[in-house]
Image 1 (tube, each protein chain N blue to C red):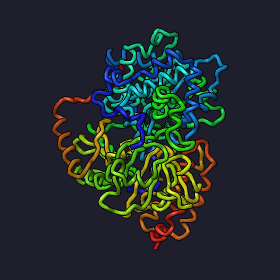
Image 2 (cartoon, rainbow over the protein chains, first blue to last red):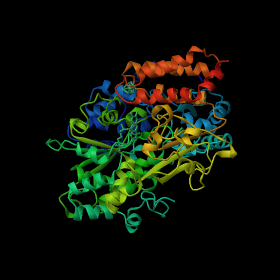
Image 3 (cartoon, rainbow over the protein chains, first blue to last red):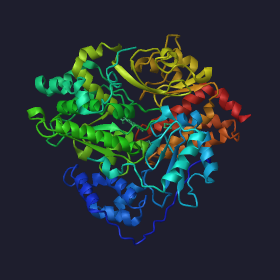
Image 4 (spheres, each protein chain N blue to C red):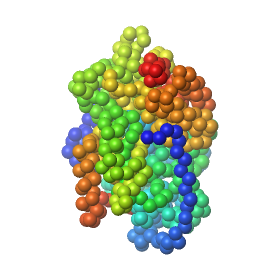
Length: 193
Length: 427
Ligand SMILES: Cc1cc2nc3c(=O)[nH]c(=O)nc-3n(C[C@H](O)[C@H](O)[C@H](O)COP(=O)(O)O)c2cc1C
Ligand code: SF4
Ligand code: FES
């Protein structure tokens, strides 16, 4: 692991992709906006960015962010400054499965360091990298609020805990198989009733 | 076992469902409050209960509620802090996952007492699956007329919404949380003004922790005085402890305040002792931000009295020999743990989570991390230890929000109690 702060400089490139939500998603977006008082529609930004990231390829392109800005009637920069602040938003394309491994104290003293090291060796990638087939991106994240069942990790916001070296191999293998089938877990939009 | 008032029904099959929860006495507190009590009486019970905020600071909840600006004609808001991101803390998650209706009931009671019509649950984005669980509970409550318009035929109406964050520890700090809820970066605000006057959308706002708000339910059910009879001294009632680290039985436990730390660690009812028969080395008793205690000071105070799980006992001895109850995130280290490595790890956390607004925190956490990294990797210098102490001192008390202190205390306390181990890393 490297020392000190790593500063990420991102150059955002417009892809000139057309971004539009489906009618069902737009309906969900409108109902989310109604949860906040008149004129405070900007409050819906985080929930909508979650949905946008999930439905628009697993990351927030400038085009996606501009589209979200237009939906909320706010300036694009108001979306960029938020998207860059929160660690759950990705600004560039990720692997199909983002493996987010907790590296904070409690997990790390319960075997987390070995698990992380093993994932690197098993996938032949370092933290922050994506496997050449575009299947896995490895990230180290801070405490996931699951310290009692650590080492814990998330696969695209789905929790996995009690990880061991064996367990993590099994998980990766099963994701490889699953990638050929349909996704089954509930999306962001479906969380809100 | 001490008396459980929050988790007493956690093992009832299907308790997450409205019907089952109701069958087991659920929503009786709301029936009682809306049927027989005025909002002021509900607040009075909370004051009598002696309940103190379970988010970390331990501020009396009834007193906090009494600060709410009731003269303003703006709408008032209740915000439930479910950001739970302090390393070692996972009790709110447990509560929401298993007993969502206990929280919803607490939110209804609190909103009634405070005259609030809109309540937001701000939950950390990583708990995506809990958003669905909570939203389901809210809509079940709504179907049964416990949420929504004219609740139980009274004039009281309430909407509750779940609002996900997106990965930022700092959004647990109440003013950062409000900024985030307004759709902005989570930069803490300068206080005053306090949220009680200018909170969400500049309106009077109360921010309370999940466990605090869930506890209002048994308080109204049993009465404030009965609740205050539990616990010890000014640490009334029960507390959820999330225990992790090198113990046999990590998990969430409800303890009656005043339980000796030794019982908590070694009893089979709770942590079940140190894993693999090892020796206890150190404990961080209240989430990563509070000072670390070496084994002897974790079990006994400097005056050789048994250390208890209570606000007063854990902080006895001040920073010299005490710590804090904090969030109840109880991290246990066995004899093999490396304190330097652990301190580096936690400092990296604070460096990463600093919002960057104030220089002492932004720069100081970065410097501390670099120095600790160098120590941990055998490149340290003798002067580094005092340098660390100086940097920590210069952060403490000089920042907009308490994250600065939270980053400084673990470093300062680790050096205070384990200086020898730091020195060994230099040789
Ligand atoms: C950096 C930082 C992080 C915090 N994180 C949380 C949190 O995740 N949950 C929480 O309830 N309180 C957290 N707090 C405390 C809140 O600012 C606030 O005091 C608390 O929500 C008040 O609720 P209570 O009075 O019920 O404890 C945090 C404070 C700081 C300074
Ligand atoms: S103390 Fe740190 S986290 Fe808090 S406002 Fe200052 S820079 Fe931000
Ligand atoms: S330290 Fe890994 S989940 Fe808390």
